[in-house]
Length: 334
Image (cartoon, rainbow, N blue to C red; front, top):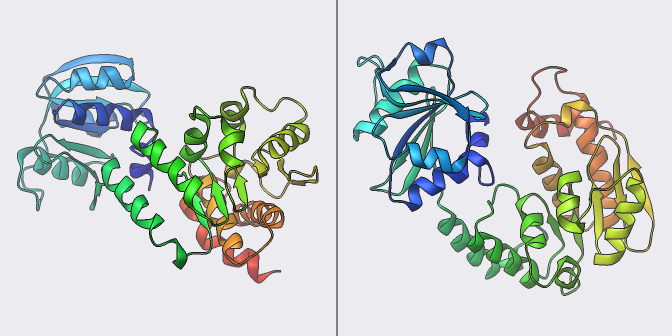
């Protein structure tokens, strides 16, 4: 999960990789610069520069691999020749992909292979391999979903979609055309804010209930300002202006509805301050909406279940993928 999170749409690393593909180039990227990585590096040059998508795509013009810090915040080395153990088995055929798989099986770090010929992005981590879907495929599937919405009872839109123009346009199309209760999260909130008609005007064209799930940064994107000290007032104002339920995430999560009612949920703790946990929250709320729970109550109950589930998790090393297995423990105690 952590390997995929590093290259998820919307991350700086994914933007850099997309730039490489758009320029019809390839790349071999190792996310980690520990001793085990350096032991299989030959040649190249030390860079130790702050990461940027532009810098990554420029370095991809060279033939060698690019070595990033483990958190992708810095580019450690470039134009490196990777020399993994040739006896490590690989099922790949192309030179770049064979090297990527052997490196991933030799060290504890994600390896990304970008193929210019196939226009694909493949992530390797140990024995794990995953080929990422291009944004055009995701847009096509979204359009297919629009034609079959009668099969569904609710929609969750936004997590992991990315912020490319065509994706944002397709996301807004889904918002307008889906006559179902909807949770808008993550990149869906970006698509909503990046909208010439304005957030309120678009949402008021919807015919079904909507739940927005912003954190403070996304709140600023939607309204032009962070929530400030009075988070209840901020959530109420956005709910009133947009005619939606607003679930403002934070240490104390505020749920507000257009009429002014608000609930504060304090079930969670610092374990939820990690990437991907908000996506799980959106899914919980969406599940409750699909069961015909009133949107205001679905948002508040979802936030409470989400927070309580985290408290069953480990105090250290908790990640978003731990949450789904903990939710039944919460529900069994109700």
